[in-house]
Image (cartoon, rainbow, N blue to C red; front, side, top):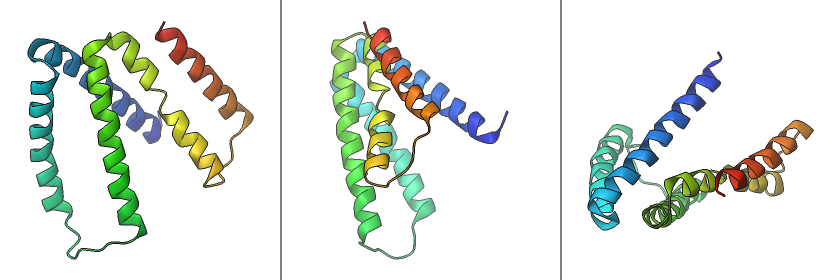
Length: 136
């Protein structure tokens, strides 16, 4: 198995277990407390990453602004996901919201002018169908 597949499978497994454990925990203590403990843990991990990866000087440019905006958007989506997960079944919310890479692909095609093969297009259509069927 090539390294790309191994990395992708690792991400799928980690994110799958993460979503399941968050659902279990949030059902037990409520989403507000779950968010507190999740982001407290995230702050500790983030502090370690910031210390390790500090670039030595601050800069504000197009790339930095894109990363900061991406992080803001990602957090907003995650918080909405947490509330949806509290209110609805994980077996519905998770597969349906897992279609988010389709937005990335579409934006990459439209803005970055990336090309899709016919197999890619069929794969996207099957992913949409799978998300719909899993969330029914």
